[in-house]
Amino acid sequence: MPLYTYFCPSTNQKLDVTHSIKDKAQTWGELCHLANLEPGETPLSAPVRRLICAPAVMFPTGNSELKSQGFSKLVKRDDGVYENVTATDGESRIVRPGDRSTYPDLKQKIGD
Image (cartoon, rainbow, N blue to C red; front, side):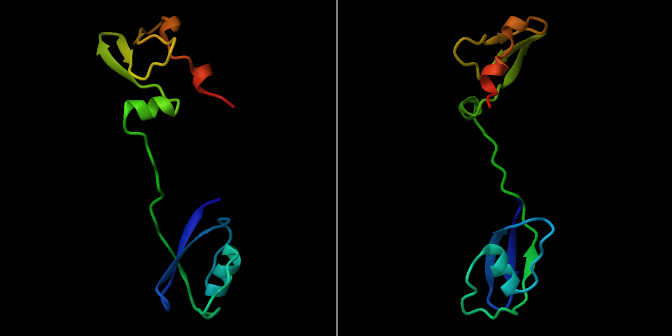
């Protein structure tokens, strides 16, 4: 379920709530009901609005992070030759197109 950020202008409070895309809160009372929270001192009829926020996306930046998360990074080194800079034990560091024995072991990287 998506995470939404709501703002209550009467109290300058922000609240992050996870709910269905079909649900929409327009008052503090509805928002507290969706979040399963006590309303506190804020009036239940206080208006709220949903803010537009960029999603938090984390992408591994280094080769070691890519490797630990199961990714393979191939860097072109020569004409038709690639280096697997995230090669694990037993994997070939040099990858040649058409030679499947040099490809990264995806079955080992992709698990249930």
